[in-house]
Image 1 (cartoon, rainbow, N blue to C red):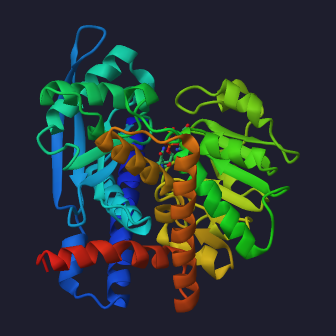
Image 2 (image 1 turned 45 degrees about the vertical axis):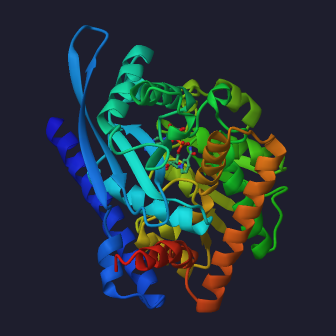
Length: 426
Ligand code: NAD
């Protein structure tokens, strides 16, 4: 049993190493097509800085547990780095590195004055108490405090972290800094300087991409059959928005299994019953697996959970007309090729999920100016940014005859490449 577990985890690590390796391959391809020299690739293939920290936390039983965490800062030529903090048992340094590169690309795609950053702690928050999570969140901020800050590197929520965790982190940083510093972190509760629309921003951005992709494919959201993998922040809001837009959400899932109803699931009921970690399927006896979910007959498939879900093993069986990646890295490069060759329109993660960092940027701007915008203003600004990015990438893909992932990397890498050159780094 232990040996099996070890084998599983070593296979997972290999797959994660591939996430970084394959990300680098697309960055290299994008830079070459844009005519940049190889030195630029050498600069951008890794994070400028990667800090590993050890965080001692007193657990509820009185023992001390020491957690390992990371903070990566990919490139700060354009501006401070920015990116979420993930609490998950499978976090690795390589994964955090790849996620930081993706954040740089996202910032370039939606034209934000940022570079990419990312953080992660190896832990399972589902098995920790509120008090233990607070200790871990505050300990992480103390450990990384010297390299982060509102003009250096600005964290945010990611998998299994939320506005409460952002609030503890902001409070800890403000204590260290000796003044109230809401611009240190985004994704905060509204009363602590959070922005309207931040909680649902990723899903809003994904919805805008789905609408645009459906238009290109000549069908409407109303009546379309949708499958969403993951029912956390991104997946649950997305299911809600698509349900409200008249789509039939026929499948959803969480880490424990999936639900399927060809006539459409009762999304309002599921939203009401999900817990704060995005778990809902445990309440049902009749479930299917996440693997079966991905292969359901549908018009729109949205992976909104974790990476490496669509691979060369199942890409041939995907039946959707469009696949829109709300999660980071859900489709491997081999699978990207298979889906594209099969005529499936794949809207890549660095574009589709850029709504989160866009509204995080709005939150940071509001914190810095001390003046807050109403929700409709945020929505309008987000809509404009996403439509502009979608069209720039779709048109690049069409003109050059390439898939939207490579087109997105080409659009995303340009600003960072130019800024690095103007600074004289290359
Ligand atoms: P979350 O923690 O709120 O929810 C994650 C969901 O995925 C939960 O329903 C969980 O049960 C499910 N899940 C976990 N492991 C799974 C597995 N092995 N198989 C199937 N389901 C699994 O996380 P989130 O914030 O919704 O993030 C989801 C994805 O979207 C991640 O890849 C994240 O990086 C990406 N993303 C999120 C944001 C954001 O603002 N929340 C922004 C950009 C990208």
